[in-house]
Amino acid sequence: MGESGARRKGLALATLCITMFMSMVDNVIVNIALPRIGRELDTGISGLQWVVEGYSLVYAALLLTGGALGDRYGRTRVFRLGLALFTVGSAAAALAGSAGTLVAARMLQGVGAALLTPGSLAILRHVFTDERERARAIGLWSAVSALGLSVGPVIGGPVVDHLGWAGVFWINVPVGVVGLVLAGRVLPDLAPRARRIDLGGLVLSAAALGALVYALIEGPSRGWTDARVLVCAAASVLLLVAFVLLERRLAEPMLDLGLFRDGVLGGALLSGFMVSFGMFGAMFFLPLLMQGVLRWAPTDAGYAGLPMTAMIVAGAPVAGRLTGRHGPGLPLVLGLLLCAAGLGGLSFYGAQARYPEYLWTLFAMGLGMGLTFTPVSIAVLQRVTPARTGMASATVNTLRELGGVVGVAALGAVLTHRLTESLTASAARLGAPPELAGRGADALTGGGAGPAGAPGGGAGAVLPASVQAAVDGAFVDGLHLAVRCGSAGLAATAVVVAVLLRRGGRSGPAAPDGGPGQPDTAGRHPVGAGRAG
Image (cartoon, rainbow, N blue to C red; front, side):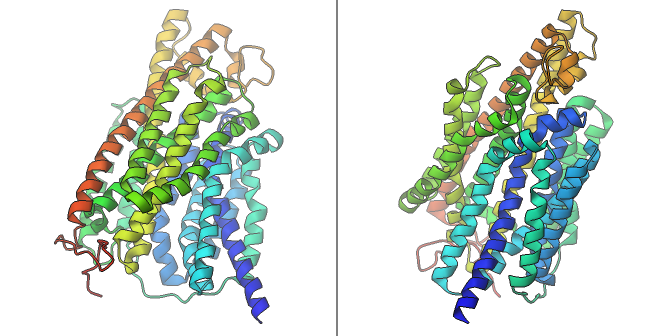
């Protein structure tokens, strides 16, 4: 019986790990396929932004609600539903024949991921009741999740080269089917419990985020004074204000705004948001640069990310030790500054740059990311009561996703706007038609696109060599401006976080009612310690 129980636990852990690995990989593996998708589905940079944002936007909007649904209808049941939707969405994405269909399938994947992710850790805690076993299981589960984010581009390159862009979605299907079979056999059924679903908060937050992303993605192409863009921008602000006002009134809100009153927690949450803002933006741009401008194959572009992956893995234990000795402030600020330096450093290299010249920027960004992940989680565990750890952890994950969503949209808007400006000026100089700006921007998404007559060229193959050179230069110009903006944001965030953590460490957090917080007997300052019930 003991051996059978241990085997069942092992299978349950394997099920949860492989499904989390799959959902984490899907966050980043698609980026390496973007140039090939753009060429074969005939879509430009804004269309590719929607391919990325379709998943992240829905995932971020539903993540907190997914946890509440798991509580109300049973964690395991909702986990299985999420896994099924993610698998179906993956198959639909692989079969998509147009950009619109692919975006819709990516949204279905996002729904599935938002339902399965929150329940995974809760099921794990239920399966492993021994504290030592549980700690080892959670450690493995966390490592596998981080590994998925790290190796996604490395896996994606060879897959795209050998199976086409649809391969990055097909690989999810057998994993999902095996996961569903195992989930039905080895995962325990967790009883549901009464839980209010904050539908108002869900609708307001999703609408606000969707309107903001639409305005940022469509603004460069439609024009920033376009009525639809202006309406969406204004609506996003009004909806966000309405969301905050609603959450402050609810006894059981979707997002506990009291977390942000604590300086340490606020600094940690801001760090997670901004690191994703800058790094997800970089992960969106770099494949387009490497494949669209430098003419690298997808496999080469994927392997180019290995130094960043290595530094993420190496930085995590260093961050743990620094946090244990000095608190979360030092690794968070150092990580943000390294990310800022690496991202800004990319702006010093153009279309003729060689990989060894800018390799240091990948090391800096990877180490910066590795230094920030662990202290954010530790800050949450130290500053909230056990009863609110789940809410706080879900908030961290949601803000990280939101950072990526806003980063891809905002930095992409900067790049596209500068790209269009540069190409319009180049069209006049070269005597080319005004529509060069649109054609040139779309040519960049052809992956192997090159000058006229280039083998394997996509959209860029119809452009004369002089025009192709102008397109490449305009993209690099736009990329430089985008990464400088991201770098400035990260550097400013480092200063703000340093101030917040210093003040939070001196005064302690605010209690949920806005009164002064009280440290617990371990010397920590848990948010919510004074809340009744």
